[in-house]
Image (cartoon, rainbow, N blue to C red):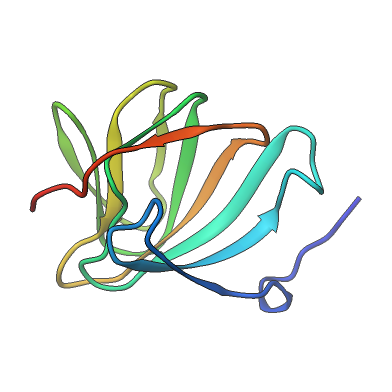
Length: 123
């Protein structure tokens, strides 16, 4: 068993890659800790978001704080604290903070998951 305290997990400032601008990421559970899951807390500053991307497994997001958007190719959804989102494997999507608010969510993926990145969404 491993117990995590949020204040003990380092915050990594991530620029580029999956993110159009930047995000702060806390990696709680990595492939080195669990053979099954990756769990991170991702904080987007106001207006920051991910690129369009596709995962080879389902992705779960749980909104902790702020107001954001989660979108696939056919719809956009405003998300607020307490909402849980499942994005199915192979579904092209993006997520991030609205212009007037930050967004913080928990992200859960399979430990061996792969993602394909595309362009940044036009807002």
